[in-house]
Each structure stands twice: as C-alpha cells, then as structure tokens.
Image (tube, rainbow, N blue to C red; front, side, top):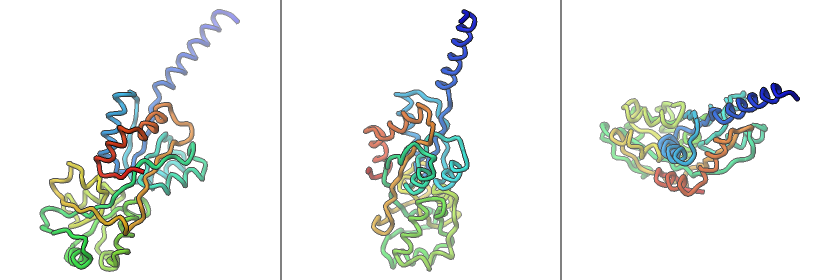
Length: 252
C-alpha cells in the first residue's frame, strides 16, 4: 500500500471520527419535565460537555414521530406506555428505565379568586362556576389521561366534560390557566411548582389513589450516540434523582 493511500485512509478515518464525535444528539422530553430537565442537563454538561438538541412536547406526538423515522436518540417520556410500544415495534435499544413517578395537580388562576379544594362537594362547586377547564389531550399526554381518570374516579366527569379545553401538552394546559383563558386546569405538580407560572396560579396536589401511577420511562432509540447513552446513564444518577425530587417527582 502506497504512502499516499495510507495518508488518504488516515485523513478519511480522522474526518469520520471527528464527525461522530461532533454529532448532534437529539433528545425529546415530555413537557412536564422542562424545568427539571433544564437543571439536569446543566449539571450533565458540567461533567460531560455534549452537543444536545433538546425538544419539549407531548409524549404521544414524539412516539408517533419516532415510529415514522424521526432521527431522535433519547426519548424521555411522561409515561411508560409509549416507550414500551416503541420497544415492541423494534425502535429502541431495550425497554428502557422508569426514572420518575409523576404527580397530578389542580391549578387555578390567581385573579379568579377561586379557593381550591379536593373535597368532592367543593370541587363540584368550583367546576360548576368555572367557565373553562384545561387539561392536556388524553390521547397524547399521560397527564391528560390521568386528569380524566381523576375526574371519573371523583364522579365529576359528567359535570366537567362540557367545559374542557384541550391542550396539546401539559405545559400548554397550565398556560391556559396562567393566562386566564381557563379558570382551572389539571397539570403536573412539577409544572405547578415552576417559578415561571407561580405568580399567576395557585395549586393543590391531587390524591394519587384516584388515577393510575404516572410512571415516566425513558428509552434509547436504536443506534444512539455516545452522548445519548451518557445522558441516559446520568438520568439514573444520584444527582439527577435529587433534582427530580426537588421538582415534585417521586422516585422509582
């Protein structure tokens, strides 16, 4: 083999290696996780600088996009149904891991003067007086599904269903309340605790026995980048768990 060919191979291998090292990692994250994941990612970057593109939205939309070939590397879902469906369809490395247990909250716009309560009779009165009630689309967002389960278990679904405005994800459901478009709404406790909306809303944590546990699972999509694998592992670290706990999640 000539020196020229050897040199050319070396250059090609260098560029391939450099491309792989610099490859952008696409991470899709359920909307309820935005505040917590922003903090987790900041801590991760201190220990493992990486070129990450983070996208927030509804778990259902992300799962559909992955099925249709979206080039994502790590899916941090708001439930475990979507990741497990992707695994069954051969789209993921394995079944992934449950990283957090979500909690449901009821929120009200501060300016409406609503006194929140989980008493069935008092909540029924709140629903009767409310103009609009926001929650995320149950077919797309696990917290939306849990909200419907809660209302049905409380015997309040028939009273509420005609007033519901549906949002594409749980963050938008909270925004409807914080902006006054809805009087009350259902959202993740992590979002209700967010400094970004706490000035506009008040909240109570809802009884977790009235909806199915919100087990949030993450999965690596097939052919993940090294940074995706590193982040996946970091999400299971004591530092990440401490952050999740502070943001209102229970730990598996």
